[in-house]
Each structure stands twice: as C-alpha cells, then as structure tokens.
View 1 (cartoon, rainbow, N blue to C red):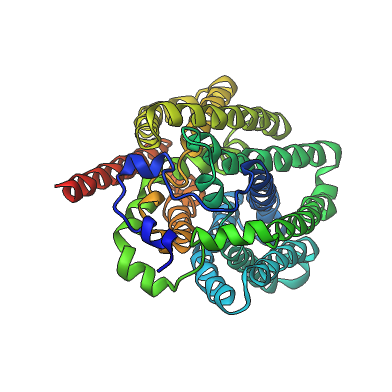
View 2: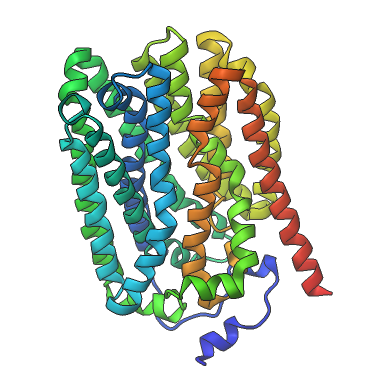
Length: 446
C-alpha cells in the first residue's frame, strides 16, 4: 500500500473529512484550473438536461402525443423524461468498466459523444404525424442514450477539487461545480423564451424547438475538448491517481460501502425534490391551468436562476462557517416549511406563482450548493470516485426523476396539496439520512 493509501486509511472524523485534512501530495494542482473544467462540464450537462425538460412541457405533448389531451400528453412526456434517470446508474456502472480497461479519456469521449449524438438525434426526430408511435419509441431510445451518457460523464474532477481546496474553504470550492445547474437553466430558459416569443406557434412546433438541441450539441463538443484537455494533463492525471480517484466495481462498492451509498443518496433528497418542482413542474402547471404568459414565466425563471446561482455561492460561505452537514440539515428544515406554503402560492395567481418560483430558487441554491459530497466524504479513499458517482445517480433517481410526473399527476387529479407532501417527504429523508450518519459516527467513536 502506498504511503498515501496508508495515511488515508486512518480513521477520520466527519469534521476532519469535511475540512479536507487529507494527506498532501507532491504535485499540486491549482483548484482554479480544476474549477473551470468542473463548471464547463456541469454547465453542458445541465443545459442538455433543461432543454429536454422544457421541451417536455412546451413541445413533446403536441409533437409526439397529438391525439391525447394536453394533460395526458404532458404526463407521458414526463414519463419519458424519467428514463434518463433510470438509465444513468447503468451508464455509470458500464462506464467504470470501460475506464478500468481503456482509461478515463476514452470513457469521457464515448460518454460525451453519446450525449451529443442523442441530443442531436432528438433535434432531427420527426413527430408522430410522420412516424406515428415509432417516433415515441425513438424519442424514448434517445432519452435512454442521454441517461447512459450522463452516467458515463463522471470525471472525478469535483472530488479532486474538494481535496485540493485550501483549508477552511472546502464548502466554497464544493459549490463551484453546482453552479453549472443554474447557468445551464438560465441559458436553456432564455433560449426557449426567445424562440417561443419570436416565432408563431406553428413554426415553433415545426422547427423552432429544434434549435436548442443543436446548441446543446455544440456546447457538448466544446465541453468535451475542454474536459479532455484537463483530465489528460500529466499533473491532473497524476493527482487523480495519487488521490485514488479511480473506478472500482459496483459490486465491491455496494458490498463494502453500501451504507454510505444509501445515506449519501437520501441526504440530498430535499434538494433534488425541490429541483424539479421549481423548474420543470411549474412550467407545466402554468401552461395547463393558468393564463400567465409562457414567455413571461420563463423570464421569471431566468431571474430565479440568477438568484439560485447567488445562493449557491452563499452556501459555500455558510458551509465553511457552520459545517456542510449542519447547513444541509437547516436548509432541509426550511424546505419543509416552504412546502406548507407551496399550494397557496401556486394557486395565488401570477404574484403567488412568481413568489413561489423566486423563493424556491433561493432555497434550492442554498441547499443544492452543498448537497453534493456532504456525506460522500464518508467513503474510504479507494471508493470515493465510484461512490460519489453512484450516490449522485441514486439521489437523482429517487429525488428528481419522477418529480414532475408525480407532482403534475397528483396535483391535476387531487389538488396542489400533494406538492407539499412531495417536498415534505424529501426534506424528511434528508434529515433522517443526516441523523443516521451522525448516529453511525457516534457509534464509531464509542
């Protein structure tokens, strides 16, 4: 065992792990360089993600489910939306095997080209008017391709960034990768708002909606070269190896670190549940059940995206001052409180709906900024790379995959009160997982 492995295998308390007291390595990598690669990579992934999510509301019900009622078509679109989250853990497992055999650069190249080709394929896909039900099956296949690709796009840079963060600033550096979400959302929403407002409805459904998918493909190409250039750099590659940020089999991970995977996935659930309930779901509710302008609402969401980005930055300061776990737990409790007001705000006309969006984005930024990696520090160094990837995949699957489908389906048939139930359940899971994590730590100390 290397000296690094020996040192890393020594017991560390949660606070020690959180404050980055890891063994020093000979080759230092500037955290700023890593942060640029992380933000570029995450922005490209989230832009793809939100382009599809917005299209699931504004486009797919009319283009792929034209014979259905608008509500039913939207629900079916949300069902296809969830397929990527189901495929994502599978993509992670397969890609880890590819990396073990052919290397990190090969894995990333395959993943990002698969993501780009799946996204471009959706842009060229004819609707049900031309292909009938075959169009739906092709859309589903391309959505699965996006999920597999997202599972394979994990590069370990967020973990390396956290491990190279200066002492006392780990929360600040941990939040940098999370900025990709609001940036991607702002770009996707602004582009759809422009196209939806500039084109006639017929032209938008005919060809206008396809442009964001072409833009997503172009962004993926740029992100591919930026990330590959970084991960193949000798100093970065050596740091990834020294920090043991290399893949292990999923079977070994679950057998030895199963409890940490479980706790890590559920600790982020409040953030991930809120994620889709302020982005994709409210857009569907506005379109189906209100007279509010779609363009106006998208612009409100763009403003919310900026508030989210600012809140993510603030979360880094809060986490460094009060601890990442305490910050995440406090925000989960605040999300639980917010859930009680959600039905009133969503049913409160334009003002209430806008307040729901803006407050929701602020809470989302504060919680999501620290949701990634708060308890993945519990993983032994050998398992951190694969553990962080699978933990995130499972959290997305449980917390976000079905959020738009469940929230819209229950709210449409039984009332907006079920939005509260959904958010409250996510907050309860986060608090429960953090409590379990603390109990396990206390038992280890005893």
